[in-house]
Image 1 (cartoon, rainbow, N blue to C red):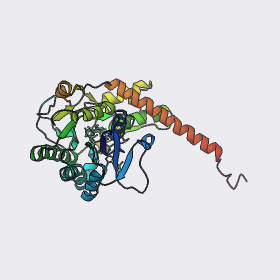
Image 2: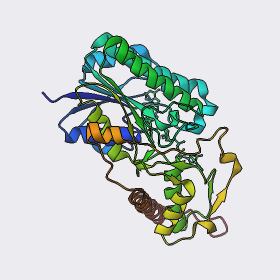
Image 3: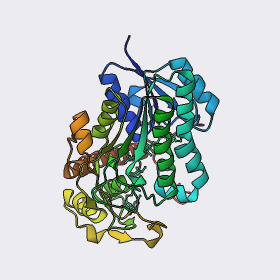
Image 4: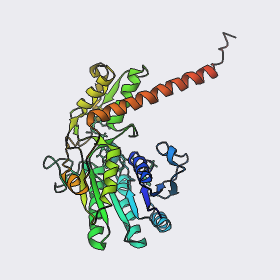
Length: 341
Ligand code: NAP
Ligand code: F7E
């Protein structure tokens, strides 16, 4: 029998890459999705015949217990969360419910149904916030700077606590920013690459950004989901930083993305003070030596390759959108105005 895995957050960026990865390893893949009035399967549409989707919600304890009891997975990857940092100031309570207490609800289901299930928690470099040292390791103290970061600290420690209290095989992956063509368009990398494509193809002129000086350690999501799986294949559970060890500013990102399509970013980018955050995480750079030494994990995509991959994918997609609109307009020409008839 192939091992079964349950992914929460399967409709998100990482969920889609992880589902592909687990399928390639022969897993029976189950995904938890929340009920919506319209389906939101854009990232997993190509996989729906190979995976099984189940409705449940991070807010609803009974739905999670029932789901885990029905599937009895070998591994659970808890990727679901309210993951956009600015929204966490607008909706701090909901962020706490999803991103913090949601983790306890998942762990309670594991404890009650089968404490032998292996559990992965999607922790975040946002927990380091106002960094205490550089680079950040598994031992660096946390100083979160947003309700999102605070909620992730809770999720991290409750995972450690269930490991210590109930001997559950629970791992926390402290992942630094990771991106891809599947990244949500509100995150800065994708916002930039989508706008670069639109500007290059003549359907947008300006790109408004916030803090250009912020620095991040950006990697490729496809590499990072591999590290999640590796953590759950070890003899004992532990916590790992996953990062490239190299940081760049938002300004570097913008320069590189515009240069890739032979444009000068200074002709198009404007800073909008409304996009600055109430408290900023100015700089992050991770030390993934433990993941390299224990798991054998190394990233395969450089920052420059990542930016190029994302710009190229957005150029393709935006060009298709433009072509579709032209075809639709040719097929349905506008009705003549009264003066023309
Ligand atoms: P994402 O694209 O924003 O996906 C989040 C997922 O969570 C979506 O599938 C979403 O479902 C689901 N979700 C949200 N609230 C839910 C609820 N109440 N019940 C059930 N599902 C719910 O995030 P991502 O970039 O893939 O990141 C995956 C995880 O890693 C998140 O926990 C994130 O906080 C964490 N993380 C991400 C990064 C990064 O750089 N990407 C770094 C460190 C940690 P809908 O489609 O229905 O909205
Ligand atoms: O911002 C700056 C912004 O929203 C990165 C999530 O996946 O990674 C992500 O959180 C930086 C910040 O990601 C804009 O101020 C400037 O300093 O892409 P982001 P994030 O906040 O680092 C962590 C690891 C997670 O766990 C989170 O779930 O870019 N920035 N101008 C901007 N950011 C955005 N979004 N939009 C701008 O216009």
